[in-house]
Image 1: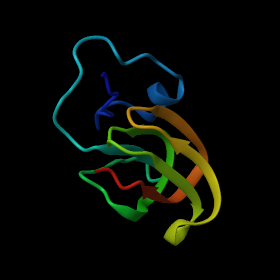
Image 2: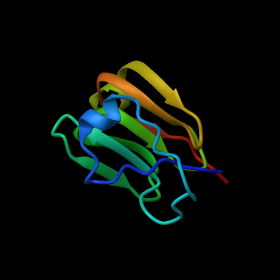
Image 3: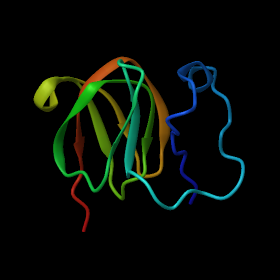
Image 4: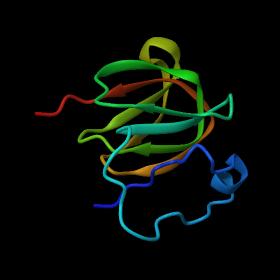
Length: 107
């Protein structure tokens, strides 16, 4: 299975342009869940569980490298409208932003 890992040196404009970054072998190490924040920084979580606030306000490119689904919410504390559900291994775009994410329990 191949995962897109967002490198901190990749400009947000490249990510927004939809450039294909999946050439070569998959990166095995690094955070399990990554996103570009409204603060234009790459944020990552390793082994996330339950509901987690999106530091920096989650926006744009999102990578779910966890073994479970990641449900992105409009409000803090996993409240408000569900904006998107990312399956394990899925990469996507989220606009305008998400405030929190709930990770499913995997066994």
